[in-house]
Amino acid sequence: MAIDLDEALNARPATREIAWTRRDVLLYHLSLGAGARADTEPELPYTYEDGLQVLPTFAMVAGQGISTGDRAAPGLELPGIDIDLRKILHAGQALRVHRSLPASGTATVTSRVADVWDKGKAAVIVLEATAADGAGAALWTTTMQIWARGEGGFGGEPGPDVAAELPEREPDAVLESPTTPAQALIYRLNGDMNPLHADPGFARAAGFDRPILHGLASYGLVAKAIVDGLLDGDAARLRAFEVRFAGSLLPGETIRTEVWRDGGQLVLRSTCPERGDAPVLTHATAEVTS
Image (cartoon, rainbow, N blue to C red; front, side, top):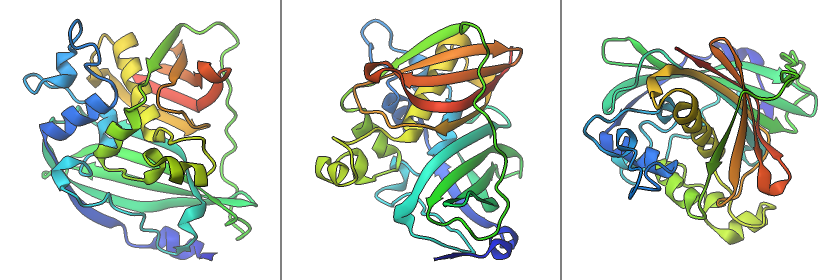
């Protein structure tokens, strides 16, 4: 296994074409619990194609869901990086939307290795991707941090050391996102069919008592809670969202998110109350508009 830093950072960006439909968006929203109380609160802006708005975090699954048939989600393409994919963890995720996402459309996604940090016992690979419409206008930019165990020590820079500092006061809001035992089974239909989220035997072999929820499902659940609880249900007001994944969540557990306001930025911490407020998302911030 090896990391060639020069090759990784100077490789030609990869491009791919994606497409999505209203059906993909509806499934994504349902996989985050939209319409769970349809008899009293149908949440039509999320669950009905007439007037459908799109949660910005749909960008994380666009082009991977049911419109693509049975094709698997695109794998990692890491030029200059030869690592054991069994040793990687999705460590962090950032998203910035440049305008409201359309309920259906096509885009060209351009991705590259933006950085590789040497943490000694591990490497952190930073992948950046930008989606643009047919006219070349940017729709969204994502940044993913991948923690590669045992791949450090290649002589690179350690990268930024960002402390998880929270305001020394009570949070301005506390949001709760309940999940159901079937949450992961629905969410995986967005494109991530990893058996870790469905097969009890596979999950036990990986060290878990039972299948766990996708990290990006927790990411989407908290984004929806922000929109519904703080932004009057207007998804267009959530412009950016960045987190680190600090712990797993079991389907059926709750995500509790404490929120501190700082102008147009929110500082957040998400925990699982059923397990003594074990951390789920840390180093979390969101940028919102008024």
